[in-house]
Length: 388
Image 1 (cartoon, rainbow, N blue to C red):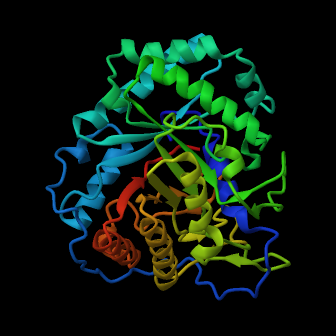
Image 2: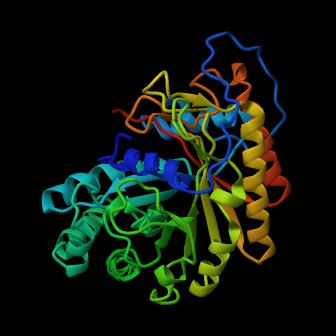
Image 3: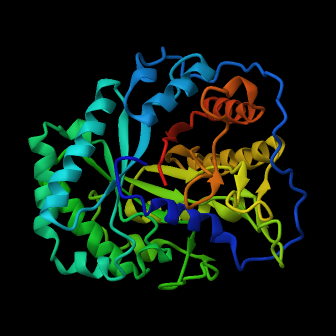
């Protein structure tokens, strides 16, 4: 992604491996890359019922250009919230530079009446970054960052929702201690709301929790997330984000595994328990389905059929329904970016740019969104280009 230093592709790559070390089951029958032309497919209306946004296709932001294609597929507006990313600065120079870039994005979103869901991440290359933030050595830098956003003309409404320290229960930030996470969320959320008191704060935890610095990412367990949220003051955080992605072993792996059932990679019960502890009423699920994995290695590459992707998304919808039945306002953030040419080497997209009518997987997207609409479950999106 263009607007931040994306160690994120590493994090989301790792998110794919959340099932490693779990129950090993037989190898799937995969369909591999095909370069044959596919027949054109027509689809029903999956819009919100509102008109499409104007001039998206001419935007300088790839996320807004991508949204134009989703709206063409659905013949109208698809969502009013898009996920984007911002890097947490560690110097005053970074604070000013990053604030200018992020402000540009926020203003373009606002011009289209799009609400940003900003994932605000520290650098994963600094092993002690969370301890350093907790100690307060970056307080002034963060204060300068928020102040710079204000100077750029950003309002509380334009800020949208900021997701602080995502995936804190994974090895992404080298420590998974709940107390560190809670202390840092309290700190940064307070700094944000000092400048933008009406802006929103969210958190995002993985469905599986890992030991500190589990470099192999193979010791994750489905366990209560309450320790991560118990020390957050009521009212500080406005919503709870919950992440889980399907995964499977490489085609040439010596031991085959797969984790393609939503109850395995995105069980609703853990999100419900944590959100109740926080006393929040909004839960958003961050997930997707891959078309291709391990795209950097022909021998390792695997793919899912359209039918498999539909089945996975149907399972996601079922988990979202479980959340809704508990009285929560629930949305699904569909991660749909093609990251096959960056470090992650996974294609999460449902069509290539400009070719939605030629992709059978467009039908999987269409069916999923219509299912959410029928159940009054919200849809958020992440899809934007990223350079390696």
